[in-house]
Image (cartoon, rainbow, N blue to C red):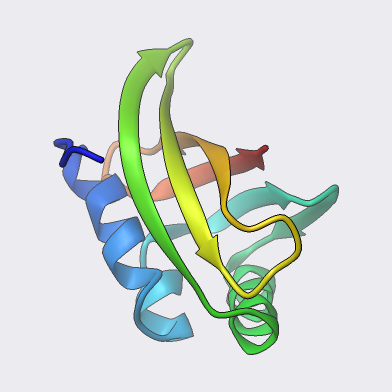
Length: 110
């Protein structure tokens, strides 16, 4: 897969995804909302827990390979490969950012 140029806040998200929950949580606004696997996580504490639970259940790598803008969202398609059912899978990440570059909304869709 080819390397793509992501907007800085979204590149920071994918870099932090390889680190710990604290680095990951810093990518989000205080009142951010994440939707993943049919569940909604509201606020930094819930997002930190979601990241921690996902990391403890699965080992994975995420390789973004497409980025586009649509309806005030940045949509990144990434290949996830790891220790989860159905691996590898291409997921679409729908990001909305605030004026400071923090993620206010993220929806992850297969």
